[in-house]
Length: 178
Image (tube, rainbow, N blue to C red; front, side, top):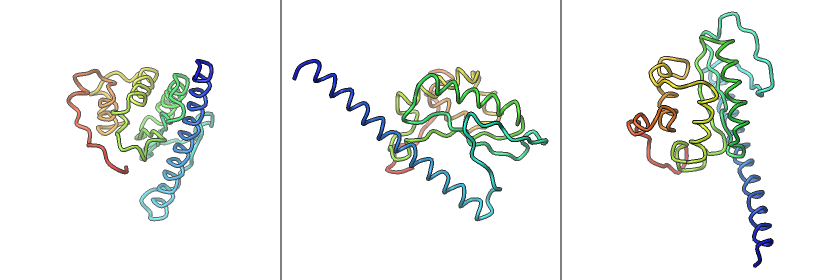
């Protein structure tokens, strides 16, 4: 097989991988939507709405008191710097408009991967990129902020706060399903 054929085959493989990754993202998004609808139906949470990054944030005169925002900071099919920057901009908008809200970080497309996000090099790098764009630098400040201890531990395990913090965070072993 010559070089041109090999390159064509590699380009086709990347395209197929991107298609598969997109399917995984959509499957995770549907699963998250079902889980949210079930939580609402069971009275565990109030009705909310899903917004795209380009959607304006709804008004809230409480500053987000009691509000939980699920923020998708990455998807398996798009780990680009532009995607990280767009998610960071939405983070900053949420923080300005809802200073009292709790924020839960989501990453779609990896639910069926037995590895945790910190153990997937490309995904962990995307998280570090997002945190740089979002201006998140300090572990202790993050623990007491809208991400809380769980979000801070996730970012720390991805290496956002440096190698020493990353080494001190214990992540669970790989599982068959999340």
